[in-house]
Length: 438
Image 1 (cartoon, rainbow, N blue to C red):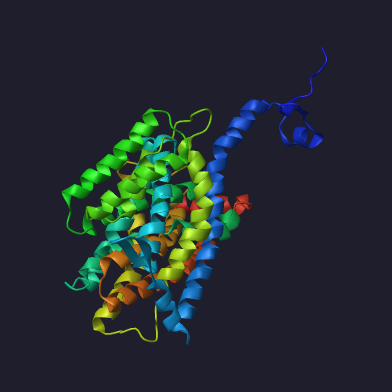
Image 2: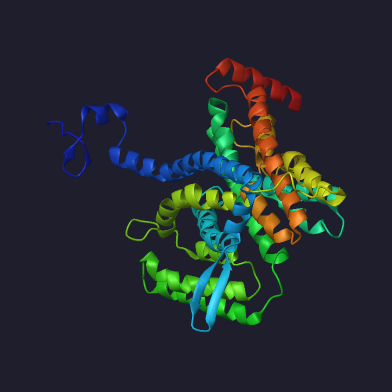
């Protein structure tokens, strides 16, 4: 028999480079499927890690601009009124509102699809796999809230209890990426699962605690929009543009109902099909298309619009100082304490177990990096405070805490985690860890 040259693509024989890149026993079609299955997660983590740089640049520009001689132009820009006018009908809002309540809907839409994907075939698809990140995430929400209320539990500041409960996945993944070979793949996946659940909890907090008086008529309109989306799906419509109109109806209904309109993005994301249709998953393809725009466009714009705290003119009275300290302590201390205690409790009770290769040292690094709040924390702060002075204090607390958590994650990660390329060092550290557990 004459050996046939394998083909990697229809009509194209394999080149020597293609042949040497696969092991002799690899069946190329199976290899191609496996590569496709792992590509979304790798691409997601890569984009999140690099988008952290864009967030840092945007936040730095906002801080410098808001504290420069041109500070008035910064405030004027985001308070510029934009909107639509048709005869006597008009809908006009500030540019800041357009960013926070409009563009961020797309951010939450992608978050909703990511949650849906993880529930379908990811780390949250099985109870035993979801138990650990779920418990760790809940611990990382409850503990910071307790720390905050303990420090700033006064009536005028109590509404900010949820500000230090959120984790910024872009910065957290970026810190783990900078640690390089010290971080096993299992820790990155655990962080991703924890962050997804953390986002889900934050969404529920926004829906139940930071929404105004509920209007039934708005929910009826939102139900109509959601019903149209399901109808189009049942009819087999796969053109994303067709879903924009019912999506706007759903958004308008949620907004008029008194619920924060970004929740509409989450609902649409959760309703997006994940099962492949003609070989392509609608949710997967939309995430792949929108994620770069969100990571490199919407999130930096949000940071530019919201991170501009006027430090020199901040009213740092006793109340504002309490808010700053409460947010910093909640994120920098509350997050790692909550994650570590919840994880320890879950593993000792046998409810969950750490993934193979991870130890308590990895949990500590996970908790410290989870203390990077930024995007979601700034977003919750906007909803929690109506007082400009307290909002500025909460933002300042978030920025300081996120910076401390980033530096802390890098330093503690280098101190606790040995490079994976050094088996002897890793084995020694693991044996020491097991000895302390005994």
